Image (cartoon, rainbow, N blue to C red; front, side):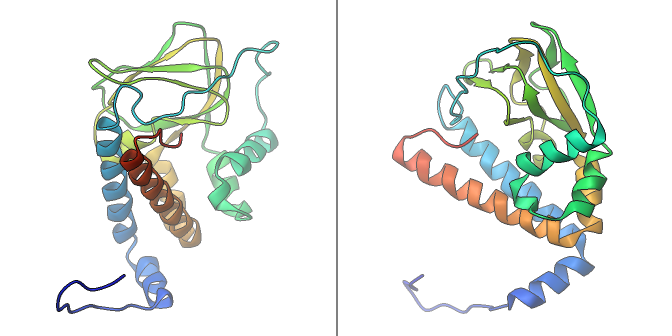
Length: 212
């Protein structure tokens, strides 16, 4: 960074910031809310696709059987790569998942409904449709509905199952409770969201699609 005019700065060491976050989790919650709201605003301004790269996934065989705890934990490790080797925190999250099974045409939620949870798609395709805008398609490996509950806003699109769908649903408050007990996970989550936000900002400037 280069100063373009006389400036006064406050410089904090990373170690000090971590200590502050550990003692005052509400700061992390506020940061997550602000970044989620900013990313949601960018999605709104990104045109008909909302800045999403729609999946090309097509059904291959039948949906998988109900998932046990180990399978949920394994899926979570691949779906939340920022969590790395934090197995204790991931196990706490995996225990809180609700498995969701939808038939084609079933609605996960409708636009403008209150947003309290988000869904990891394990198998199947979900359509996102917003009045006057977004039309996107999500598939296995995608997380749907994350920005609403973390930004404190209502659902900004209707989510409907295009095919049979198997997903894992988690309350945003449950994830935040786990993060409060595992500060390192919370900090990795903030860093991951910051990278995602920067990516969306840069790609919106280039006129390209943003990440999932």
